[in-house]
Image (tube, rainbow, N blue to C red; front, side, top):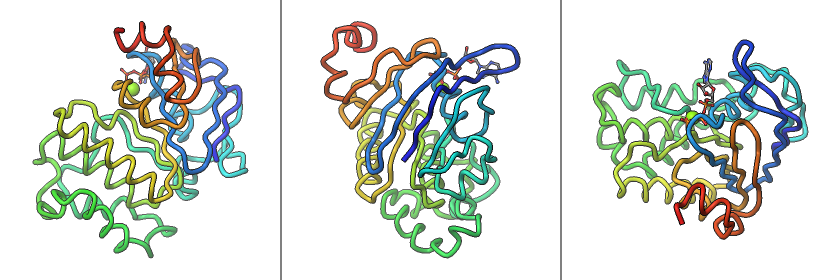
Length: 234
Ligand SMILES: Nc1ncnc2c1ncn2[C@@H]1O[C@H](COP(=O)(O)OP(=O)(O)OP(=O)(O)O)[C@@H](O)[C@H]1O
Ligand SMILES: [Mg+2]
């Protein structure tokens, strides 16, 4: 579904991402793990087009999308939920959710998608008229994921969805990710919660200083000595 080849990118003169190759098959969950400042957000922003690739190609569903705008990628079903929350604070939950299906391509599916996200996140339905800016951090996180689902993602990129959540909510977030997969959505998951992210992953990549240093099935990486020492403290 997604193939990236020899991708490099960065900011100004400073290169952050070096020669990355990745492949994501349809219907799978792929986890991208790595320590702070490894370049995870920079890499996925390059995939979604928010940052321009310096070199290399991004192919989505057989099409070379390297030169496309972020909006054109969204129309093709490549949707990213940003790190942090980035909701519209002065709009209600429902208005925020509807903004997720603003594009013409998905507007016809609005009601269906709204029903689905309210089913996944009943709290959002209870609070549908509350201003997003007044939600708790965890609720905003849920609302941001729900808004991404409103856009009919084929590939959903989640940047640290469990960040800052209480343990009970973290469990819930991972359950929801599995539910989204069952719906047929392919998922690229960036996570600091390495153990959980690997348990869930069909395939995983470890990013260190902008380079992929390990890749394999989630299960294989969980058993890998190098990874256990660096990320699981075993
Ligand atoms: N807009 C920017 N301008 C310049 N440098 C940046 C910018 N954004 C990020 N960086 C730098 O790029 C490097 C990688 O950052 P990035 O946000 O991709 O890491 P990350 O793996 O997502 O980290 P975290 O787990 O903390 O979110 C860091 O050294 C960071 O300071
Ligand atoms: Mg990040």
